[in-house]
Image (cartoon, rainbow, N blue to C red; front, side, top):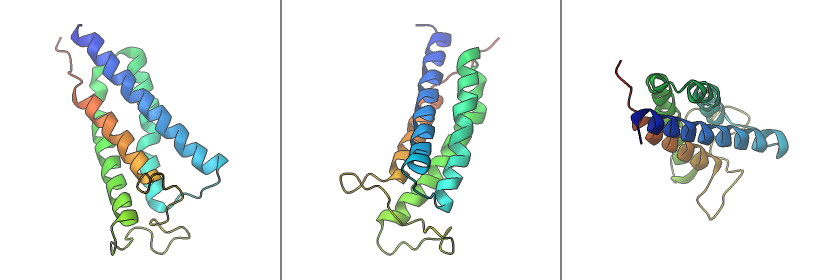
Amino acid sequence: MSTRDRNLLLIAFAWLVAIVATSGSLYFSQIRHFTPCELCWYQRIFMYPLSLILGIATFYGDARIRRYALPMALVGGSISTLHYAEQKIPGFEPTACAATPIPCNIEFVNYFGFVTIALMAWTAFVLISIALWYVKEERP
């Protein structure tokens, strides 16, 4: 498999993950009517554009997207880590949204006792980051 084909496959995978994460986020807010907290909004700020720019990069086969998308995924994943810590670590006080209508430590979803929306977002950011980490820019 050529480097170009491998890159295209990795970028397409990252795009698929971003689409699923964006769709899940919209499902929880628009269909299930869960009001997003402040940290959820910050995570959306980093995930939603990934759905668009990774799609464009997949269409054009542009490996340079790694320069822009990887930092976005890493920052979004860091916000998800903080959000999950606020939900699951006892005594970890909510910092970003203590004064907002929806506190960030509220768990609208808690599958298997540990899978929350913040963990789902973190998983998506990690998968996107890993895929983009292995994308190699082609030298002319």
